[in-house]
Length: 314
Image (cartoon, rainbow, N blue to C red; front, side, top):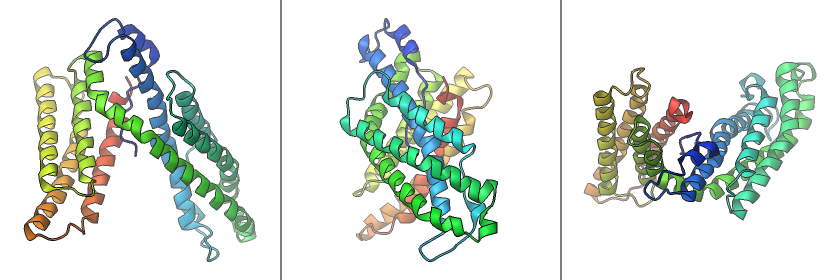
């Protein structure tokens, strides 16, 4: 899951705001950043909405259909993307919008990775259509005992491998842009609308993101993690205080996000306690996989919930 909130701020919005100097965002810089946010919004939508669907299709196929050992037929378990044709169309549209609008990314590596993803999707789409028809719509595998499926299998496996590699390259190339946005997003939102409800939500998310990054570091220390956990908790309190004093959440939309914040806290506390125990015993911090997995799940769920909220749509 890509860790950026959808802001949906378009070019026209930016142009209206260029006359309002604000911190480091002044004139053309504000407009350029807003344009970049619009582009990245489309790319993040691709990652979080479409790429995840295709990955689920590939993974479920690998687990439940033909393998190198022969037939492992559980076609009912394949996760075909909803309205598959439209899913591919929307994915390509998001990529096209992201890479063919101004300002340019000015990153040959990112442009090249995008071309590889587009090519892999175009190669995968007809194979998806065939698999969907064969296993789901017409259920021909029940009539030919997977005969055609065995012919289709190596083509799908090859297409999945190309998609996996292209997706990895795009995520890697996108990382510097993700870091840049993360470092500037709080000030940008404050510039647009002051210390609003959205400002406090985005700031809370940003501190949660920083907490998750710290938790995933190879040479993590209990002290560093504790410091970021405390900052995240304090920011939650500020968000709660703002809501109570301003009556800013009449429909309890933000309240629905608090359980995800608590889950991040809880999983981080488990990791922190384990770290403290290792440090006290003077042993190598070797067995933290379970705690890291819990943290990742909680963090990804937080991203999902915020991206699904109204803060992603205005």
